[in-house]
Length: 255
Image 1 (cartoon, rainbow, N blue to C red):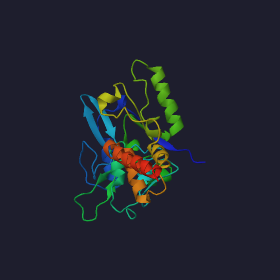
Image 2 (cartoon, helix red, strand yellow):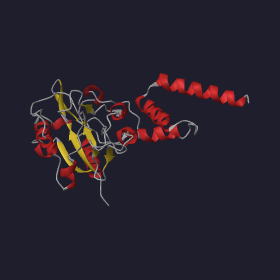
Image 3 (spheres, rainbow, N blue to C red):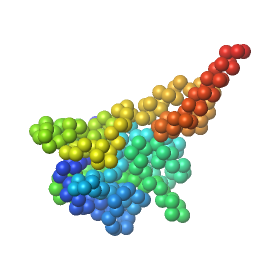
Image 4 (cartoon, rainbow, N blue to C red):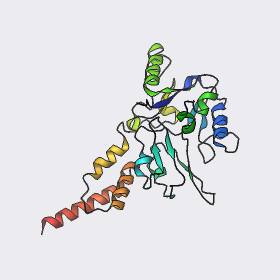
């Protein structure tokens, strides 16, 4: 049985050399050059918070919302861990962009034939037993690739060994059901731009739990939209939906 892979990023070891982004750009054959934010030509980006450097990339969720909302199966989660994208199936609906709790996917707005772009965890390399390009290029050990369970144990051991150095949290261990990209840091995650108020349950699970309560008369398209509303926390639209449902129930009760 294939053990899911992951990547542990120790923010305390990152020196901001940008070797990860350079290697990523080379591997994905996109224009060279440093970029501070994710874009169609930057699947990994390095952001600076005073003297602390933080890598941004796809989190490769264990149970990805982008996979669950894609109506054509353009996104899939592999057994090894990567969440990959098939541009030939994509219809450009961009539901993945709305659903992603980490706001990762980027769209090629300026392209004649636009695609969604994001890190695919060097899926081809991983499937051949190699490391992702960014992990291989890291000169300080700030990025480590391996089996997820083993990396979680290592992260916990680092925190236990130096409790005054590290924040007592492994980001990605439980967020939205867990991710394949894990972080440890000496600076509170909320001070580094991480979303620290995410639910611990996988978002597709919440979506399907909600959909199970929706009457069968709702169309498939309506159900899909309801799922997107739930994921993106569009409270106003959800309240309106519930109001109409209550009116329908009262109307049925009067007959």
